[in-house]
Amino acid sequence: MSPIGFFILSALLFGIGIFGIVARRNVISLFFSLELILNSANVLLVGFSKLHQNLFGEVFVFFVLAVAAAEAAVGLAIVVALYRLTGSVNTEDFSRLRW
Amino acid sequence: MNEVFFYLFAGLSVAFAAVAVTAKNIIRGGVALLGSFVALGAVYFTAGAEFVGIVQVIVYGGAIVVLYLFALMTMDLKKMKEDPFRAGSVAIGSFLSLAVIVLLITGGLTVGGEVEPQISGATEIAMPLFYKFLLPFEIVSVLLLVATIGAVAIGRRDS
Image (tube, rainbow over all chains, first blue to last red):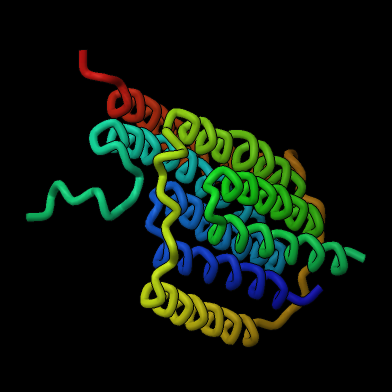
């Protein structure tokens, strides 16, 4: 099995995530795109772990997963608080810090 | 045989990811993201990373996406305006993503070697995780506790 498959999959997921972050203006969609980018990193970590016969890459996937879970929890709390404040999840309505 | 299933589930995962990012209906996007993560778990299985695949399905599919969907249920979905894509941001986004994709794949072409799909279950993962990476593991547990407390502190109403 050639390692190029992992690169293609990771690159496509990363590209889709970047596109979503630039093009969407719904905060929840931005979170979806962020999760996709984190997953693309995980794919490469697993691929290199299998390529080099070294399990440290797979262990690192767990740390990425834990950080992703923490980010989702805190980020969603912030989004829900902002939703209560402004009644919207569109990034263009979050202009409180702009004059 | 592994390779066939690898490309099958990789294609499935990419297709679901594209739906998740472009779907106008945000709930549909969340469910597509769930499909993408489950397909990625299957991709890990084809590479032999069994435990990572199981954890991917349980944590990403079972916890994170469901957390997003629950948070969406507290919001008024009818009031969310369907945002039409702007031509400018779509152009910038496509350019950036294409540049990143080309860069990553050209970088990947220089990597040689063969991936040997050796099975790494819980036993194999446990040795490095609990010997070499014990301190980061404990720090991650503190991070999760802090994140939980922070989420509760931010999310509660003022009384």
